Image 1 (cartoon, rainbow, N blue to C red):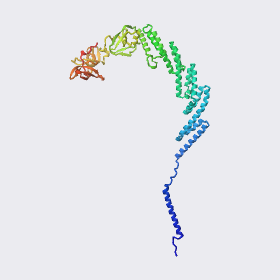
Image 2: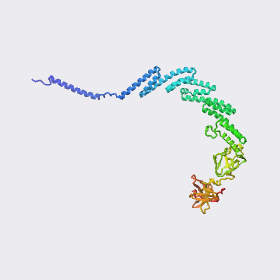
Image 3: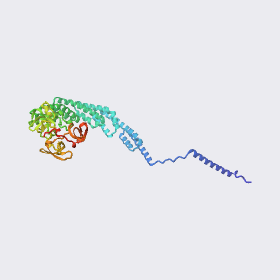
Image 4: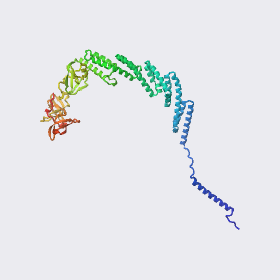
Length: 520
């Protein structure tokens, strides 16, 4: 009889194996669903990352070595190592390096301070400043400097102040200033503190020098006073500004003395001798009469009084005859005025036409004049007011406002003239040339040149209220000038009935009888 295949041992084994495999597959699927994807492979470190790590490690080693050098008080080596670490440019270590460097500088400053304390106790201020200045300059460390000043600042200033007072108390100002301006002193104190102390010292010394110069000034020993001011700068007792301040005191005291001396000599026969004395005093304090350098400009009163004296001396040279009472005159045309103290020098100013002047005195051809009414002023004041010498022939006794100027000043002058045939009224033109009594006038309307007699001319002035012939409301009317416009080519007129209109200059006419007849 045949056996069933299910009961055979071989078949059963195969079934068991198949079931086990199916179970494993199911289990694997379940595991995959529950645990997710497998982990990513570990990232491989790049060459750049390795280099950065090596740089960090090396910088850290340098910091550690610097710390060891710090412990051994080898501060220079510690700084060198920290600088090397910093130059590696590891950003994450920057703050630590800075802290380490500050720690080194402060510890080093403490050791220096301990040494300098002993020097200060011995009273050797200059030595203390000299010893400290060296490391400050070499290290150029703000932390080192700040710590030294924190630890020793008060003692350094106290020692320095005592030395300064010892020098200034015996008048040795140059020594005190030399100590204060020494480079080591400035380095150790720092620019702000040094500037403050130096300013206080300069001010203190200057006050003492001012007190000393007061005596010769009060005694009017001007040469001695000026010498004190000059020598103070030469000896180094004060700076240039201090010297100027001392000289200013001398000048202030001297100014009224010079003015009085100059005034006293006006009207005197030996005035030239007085001028010499005045000029010697002016030279003594280096006054500039021209005022070219503002800080050396002579006071106005000195310039004015000296000018009066030099004018009097020039009047003596010219043998001027003084007027009993200043006589009023008027400039005919533009008049060149020669300098009051030197009549043979070129003119530096002109009198405008019709300018009123008063004659103080006269020579054969020249008059010494002032342009301000002197009233009954004294001789000294009259000569102060003098503006210069003017040709007597060009000074008229009557007001010249309506006069034609001299022939040489006529060309270019604007005039009213009869410039049209059979037209009695005058119109504007400019003088082209003058020959005797004949004048060539260029007509403003068209630049045509017309020859007329000088006697027919009138000054081409246009003033408010002046009567003008102009076309108003389709007819010629006598109008009044209200104003000459800014362009100098147009006038505003008031017609009959109050109507206003603008008219250009070439369109204006004027009747001869409405203008004053000028002197020829």
